[in-house]
Image (tube, rainbow, N blue to C red; front, side, top):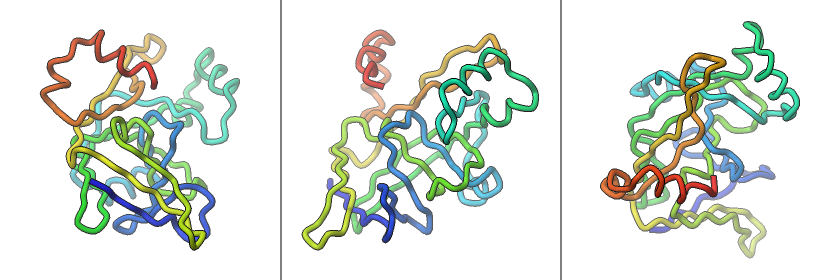
Length: 197
């Protein structure tokens, strides 16, 4: 299955439009991030449910030193700038013509980080086992091409307990083509295959 998306006109990054949303493909991201606030997220994805774990937002113009300072000395005022809620979207789709890829139970960190140029950042971990290319056509226009063997992806999370915040935090998401394969794998085998993330 092959999906092709034209890059938004004037964008110098891999940003596409889909169903009225702008989506940024981010090869450095480990978790999808909604960037325009909780109110817009809930309006766009009314079936999404809030999860019991949080996500630490790194990047977005912050230095590694700022993140380390926060982790060493978190205070009430800075927590909302670094820790964000995670929601589960039961079914998230990308489509191009007749071709559709659906992610089941996509976990998304919901934040307010406008100025990114897109409403939703799509993480590289969503596209495991797929071919993802950013190309330039002969006419000079850029496009993204996505190839997948499967039209349905099942999304899972890797979490870790955090003593500092007394709760579980999301480390990253990953997708599997086959739900049964994921259930049959041992944790050690799964972690070995995910070392790339």
